[in-house]
Image (tube, rainbow, N blue to C red):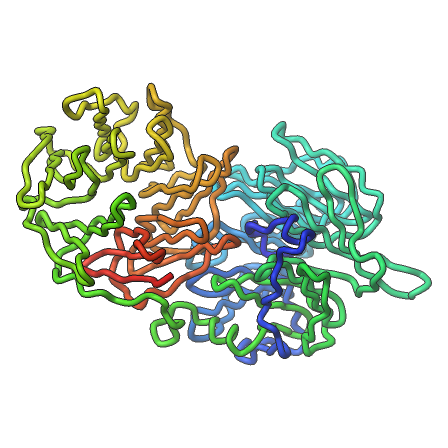
Length: 614
């Protein structure tokens, strides 16, 4: 029932006092009046990206908000829709009553499964009609749906196939853990884990709550929320349970809650909603009741691209946190764009800029691009160096003797001695060098057709190395000359170990255009269609930043990470999650770097340079 997006939420932050409570400081939640639902309508769940919001509920109701207005979408089955999940709005799934499985291809909803009728036209008691209540999946498109009588369905990319859960309890939620395992939970304290063997294993949970929602934390622990009926109270009470992979522990046992219905990451903590308008914020100082402004049952949470949420429920209830959140319902529409912290800088050129480079050894800043363009930031302004030639320059670095290296089209590398350029390497092929890496003595260059060049203190010239691929290699990063990564087409990551290049995949089929990291256990990649990936030293995780535009470059410091791309797209990771960072431009951004004063600079089309102050 919850939006199954795994964010970087830390159990340590929850329980070691590191969460600063900044959840809007709400002064009352607001009903979205523009969502013209009937008084009897029930909303169960939703899904959102940059382009808009879907909200689903009873009677086959699915509303879509496109940034301007809410419209009801035609759905080919008039039964309740309980949960939505997808890799994009062009590949969006919805599940519901009578085993309903719907697919949205970006234009229309199509029934894929369920709602089987008998000869009299009524829904039959076929196993395919077992009601479904939760759906979640992986970035590669695999998905799982769960429902009544222990029903678990697996979508393998082609078909929805039943899996044996080993239980008959009603399952109400399913989530993906950071390590790739799948967790399903439901009635009577049932918690199931699908391990790498593809089998479901029941966990020993002594808390007989009816779990309706789950939130994975970054260390594979899980928060479970739900409720159970108490005779002495003549009603339901809520349970919040922490599972650390071995034991289950009830949290805040001394408090009395109404039944919880949904749980999601929010700001620097988590938000919980439930019966009778119950809404709580979980943070470092415990759990606090928020004023939702309604007594209607709240059944679901929709996480918006902005990081805000919408809570939905009975009687057409759809709430936003405050007026600011309501404004953010129109994310990235030019007339409603949030204030930018980026400032334009005069570059003195209208050429495309393909690279920007901060020489951290000498604290110099350079940019490069079309027609041999190389710029240097000197005495408070950008000035042009003599053109390298009439070819495009994609990457810059320091030469061993302190001169400036420039590499780009036709496989050429040039060196600037302070007065003029001279060619120091020529591949003699129409192959473009796209990236340079250096530690001051060892140099790597990478580019089209799997090109890798290397120059070491022992070599007098650049030497072409066997990369092991014919794929284009767009970006290079490494902490030292024995640990270098190069990224390329279809999720390719090439790894240099000091002796040879090995190939592996970052867990995506999208092209990767750049790579940057703080250490070997903290590496980021960006690429096609807003792809963002992170490597923690053990595994790659593709993070849902919800960008639609291609992301072409990434860099960062010890506090934050910045990714830039097409149409002026900028995303910033603040240590918790990726957020859109409006740059005040719709011009394509092709490169990003840190600045000597601790800020960031991005470069792109038409000579664009914009700076984000520290």
